[in-house]
Length: 407
Image (cartoon, rainbow, N blue to C red; front, top):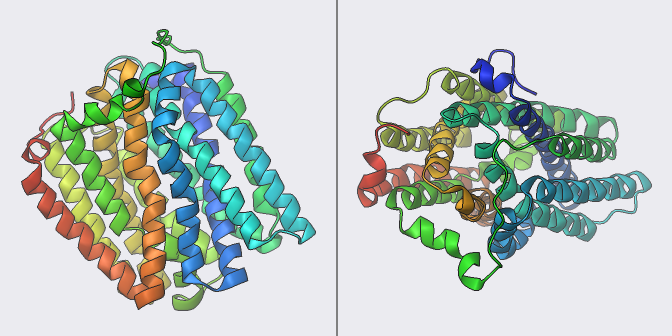
């Protein structure tokens, strides 16, 4: 799943634990992105409702928000790869259910939303476990490049997943779900092959204080709090991806294949940036570069919002993906480098709630806003909000702005 043009230190590309983790992440991301296209197109085709598109994001957000702290504690107390495998088996079973229901033509919209809720539960436990695994499978001193390469594998899957999902759905609506089940089982096998360099230390019995320790750690570290909250509001406001089915069908007048290309364009931009970051580590002004990435993301969102040409829209999405990756790599590296290993699961859970779960909430916000004022004004509102938040956060969190090197 690693792109050929992404260079990396030989110690990483020849390091089996890192390779298996990256393969598992890539195949899992491939399945998830295929599902994003298939579920979004199927729900909009059945309901023609922007509100229902927004509800897809809310259906994922609610279980993730409710279970995040429990999931983070599970990642610090139990074997992380086993937590991740259990989640992926559950996702494979739900995907098989969607395939059977779509093929038999008995699948209803409430059933689809119920499946999305289960996906949200699985992601709530799986994402913190996956994030906390990374520092334990890379050699010392290679975390930033390992993060960039892992992100590159994720983005390569994000390029292929929507395209495969769109074309598979065009062939027969049940096919993308069947492929999702296969790729999640493949991810389960890859994660089972991981052998940790630094085995986990037995954990203390669970307690309420330990459960929420990640929140306290983040609050006591202004740079981490600033980085997470910046991405939180940028994601909430920049949830244009939730409106892609409307843009594809009603504004750009394309089909499910076009929807796949739109999601893929974001990933192509992200992959190009991760390829560059994997060979050119950020040496100076890392905090400022994070703010610049968010501002550029907001500008590109505005361009996408007003575009009526598919190629201009794809170009804007390319820039959005590249700009977002800058802030993602800096944030992930900053959080992992400044967090002790016995806290990484719980802090990763807070990070997941701030970023990944809020991504679904951002799609819900975009759907509701689009239902009230239209898709285009909703996207323009989000892009302008990203820019304003970036400038405000530069004043509120000077410790983040002044970070020079990630070490």
